[in-house]
Image (cartoon, rainbow, N blue to C red; front, side, top):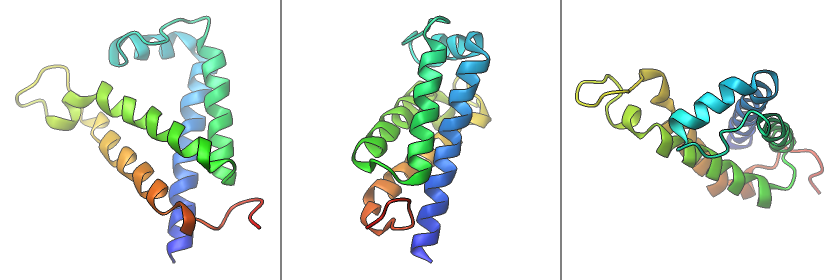
Amino acid sequence: MKRTALLLLRVSLALLMVVWGLDKIVNPAHGTGVAERFYFGLFASESIMPALGVAQVGLGLALALGWIRRFTLPVLAAITGTTLIGVWRSVIDPLGLFLERTNLLFFPSLIIFAGVLVLFAFRDDDTLRVGRR
């Protein structure tokens, strides 16, 4: 059961990276707007968004297959941790009762980051992957 749960967690997080990456490729303006609003303007350029999207799709595919986890898991933690910081208002006050510019839809960023930490903590038990010896 643990192996199956870890596989489902890894694949669902991988799909999130693929979807976010495809959005950057298909709609670079959206990615730039998100970067400007939530990521302190970091990489907020329509010209580099498609390249970031390709990298993110590649990360998602490697995650889904369970490849190079020594690289992919820390990168995934950095991406989802940065997202968590970027939407901190929505995590602290998801209903917007005390803070402005919150959105209930961003609250799951905390859950996503926690899922990445679980996957990282139990990486040795995550054995349902391609290329496992």
